[in-house]
Image (cartoon, rainbow, N blue to C red):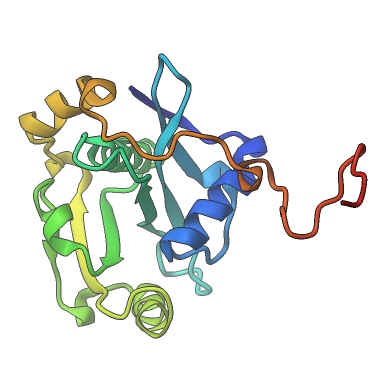
Length: 196
């Protein structure tokens, strides 16, 4: 398993899974995402993104948010989400951010890496508005969390699970469906369709 930058051609795949998981797709740009991939089969196992918020006022600093983190069915409990989060925090640090924020109802999951809940009043203004929007939309239980990028810690059990991920994987429906290729089976016509 490894985590890499998303490719432009994966935009439809990302949007499909974001929608099916009920994740936030606000200001979607595929280049902001990373994708976890099984190196043997090439199968995608999870994804996530960092979103940089640039404030309107020149005096305020840009802030970085982790969002839209998803793990596909069959890949749960394999360390996939943990490694997606790790790569995103790494990228945020590479871009010069000292603090990374998350607005999510999954605070207990992020706490194992060092994320801590913060007061809403401690959020930068642009994220306070975003928190309200998330609660009204994709995540009604969202709470604000933050981490100093140097404080991120990967639990050993998750690192080990990721190394063994393909072996420990739950078998999900692995047969490809027309929807995997962007085809709507209810309305598609085919070259050799006889109309029967």
